[in-house]
Image (cartoon, rainbow, N blue to C red; front, side, top):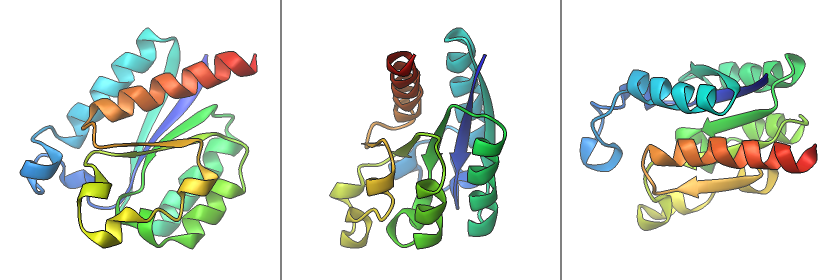
Length: 148
């Protein structure tokens, strides 16, 4: 069974409470349950992690490769825009990563328009709400089918 890591960065533990006009009213727990259900339906095992700490996110990325995960769905939050350490962690593994953002970062503040992670990920999904996570799951599954 393919193993996928769902990884959420800083402030995503506040989903449902933090700026609901931008991020919606669903909680992180609701999001994780929804994506786990979609993964199970697709024959995948999904593990969900969240951290507000850069080093812990890096540890999760490294562990994904060490534990044989076949893909990572990652919403790095604000680390998207400046974390070269997370960029290097992604570049240093052989596990495909799809970067996901709930809001359309390109329609927001100028500092959000730049992703230092984009060039080391398989792709980005932005602005499609929580559905973006399910699309990322499908993209990873499709990529793996093409690799087989």
